[in-house]
Length: 190
Length: 302
Image (cartoon, rainbow over all chains, first blue to last red; front, side):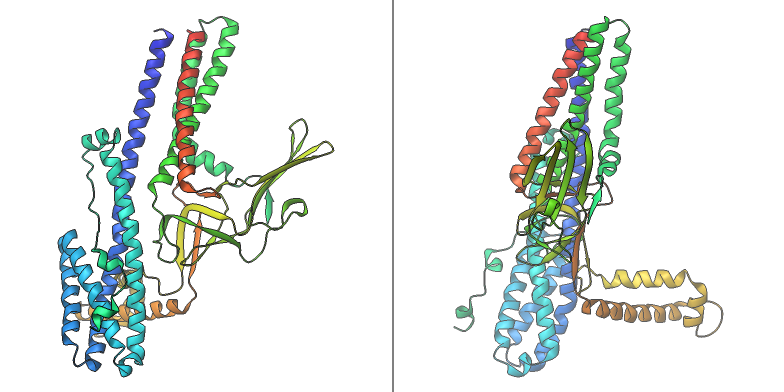
């Protein structure tokens, strides 16, 4: 074998290393997406556990806001069902509804001084708000992880390896823009 | 604290080079096999070129791996970052103790130095391992730089008599990028899962039959029946809740340090996007150099 032939063999060896490295990268990205989802899932479950306590506390004081309380309860159930089924579009819709309901609930609580001064309510409000912020940040992180994974799965040349070994794209966790913007106070008190 | 030597050097050799040893050994073995029939002068050149090829391939592997880790890890915010391998960006600050700058220089959060004779012989070297703080809009995180690959653009070198001094450093307030393993202790810890905590406690009690029977065998028959096990579950739930409440009053501390699984631990005062492009360019440069030197070596040795 001459120098050129041997170099071609070396290039093939290098290509082999590239395939191994690309395969390992796709595995790592797939697990990154799973881990990023678990990080949201754990917070969604914690919020799911806290919401009934909030609704119960509010129900004692907010006699005339049953509709808002029921909206929060319904949205909570929708999120839980979507999580169970792994339905991302329903989850996003439930999240939007829940976020809107909570924003409304906290705004309306301002009209109830006794509720506002209730220690349990204050702690729950703080806890749920902090969970909401953490969920929003981790949703962003999850979507970034999904983007990185999907680009690797679809872009050349890793798409060849992804196709051969059946690596799939992942679904984004997108919510309506209203969830990421501030609550419109004017519309709440109109 | 500034310690002598370079902590992390052995770590990088073990963790990052081990998968590559096979490739290097294969290239060298090919060289040895072809040595026999080659004229003497060309043999030396060929072996040298093979050595350069091996180093280039190692460089390709390292640069390609770092490029992937940088570009594949999304940015996290300190306060809401998940536990595990994360990428953070923020400004650095001094932590508990300041690191005095080398040779009476101003304080810095990190530094490494080399003292060499003019002919290049190393007299002394050191690298700081004192933790420092990284802050972003959401919070603060302690960075333990022990074992990190630090890429600092701030450097200074000067000559005094027959000695050459070189220092690389990071000053407080510099914008930093850190890729490493994050752990959080104290606070309400959002990742705390009560059912996991309950399972842990139950497993612990189950592994201690004396305790289990003394606490939960209410009818004294030497076994824990379904009802008694339910009581144990309820007790575990109460204990888990109390442990969580106790932890929640502890101050929250975030720490980023060297990952144990061999993933890169990188600290840099450069932005991740250009840094990633540098590693990508380096990986292409190395593979091109590796193949070229292999072709040249083969021409001399065959």
